[in-house]
Structures are given as C-alpha cells and as structure tokens.
Image 1 (tube, helix red, strand yellow):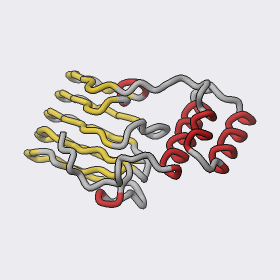
Image 2: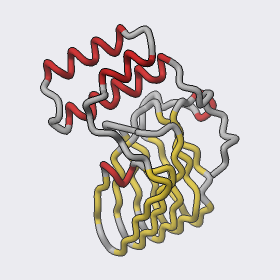
Image 3: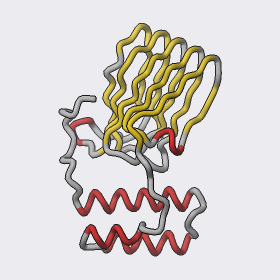
Image 4: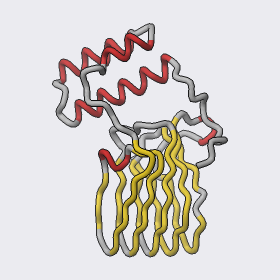
Length: 178
C-alpha cells in the first residue's frame, strides 16, 4: 500500500481522537452494548475532554477493536452483506464473479486508511461509507461503472480517512453510498 497518500498527519490530535471515540460510542450504542443514557453521558464527556488521556477513559470498558493486516472475501453467484470484523482490516481482498456484495461501514470506520483490492467479474460492489471517508479509485477496468452517490463526500486531499480501491474489474459496478 502506498503510504504517500495525501491525508492528514497520522499523529493523534485531541480533535481526531474525540471524533473516533464518539464514532466508537455510536457503534456500541447501535449494537446494543450501551443504553441511551450511558451513550449520551459518554458523548457529552468526550466532547468536553481537554486531554487525550481523559478520552481514553471513556471507552476503556468497551470491547477493543482488533485491526488486522489483511482479510479476504471470495464468492461466486451470491448476494452478501458484510459488516463488523471483516471490515476492520488494513487491506480487504475481494474476488467476486457474478455476485452482488455490500460492505457496510456506515456505523464505524475503524482505521484512517484501508486498501480494497478487487477482482470483479460481472459483479456489483456497494460500499456504504460515512461522508468523511474519501475514496480514491485506482482500479484497472474493462467496462466498469463507478459512482459516488454520497452528498457532500470528502475530497481525497482533505480526508482524515481514506479508502483506496485497487485491482481489476470487468463488466462490473462499484457504487459508494451512505
């Protein structure tokens, strides 16, 4: 993976960590791991924190998110939706033939940069991403339809979080949605 991608400094700032903690709290709330009162209290605390070590205490008792180096998906003639641990990886390899895949990052995007390396043949890949995640398309193609349908999505040079699409696609569709 190319580490020379223009994206904000990898050093953790208080503002970035607040955003990440609030995103993690939202994810845990939506999974049912936090009650609404606890969620609201923790978000308020995160917003009012003045130091990173204060923020860390807010999520100390929540499950740790393990980010792996690489995960793979391989399928033929299926329709599938992926979320959860499969997306918590630095590199996601997807090989699909005559398939429809949805990768849902909607509630939590756990890392700053992820490469998705595809080998698509007559397939559709839908990525559900928050607006603050930019997408850089480097896919070699033969008859690929690529469309980012998100309103107000972040541009690559301004992004704090980035998905880099690489690989090859033939007679396929890639759609980016909320």
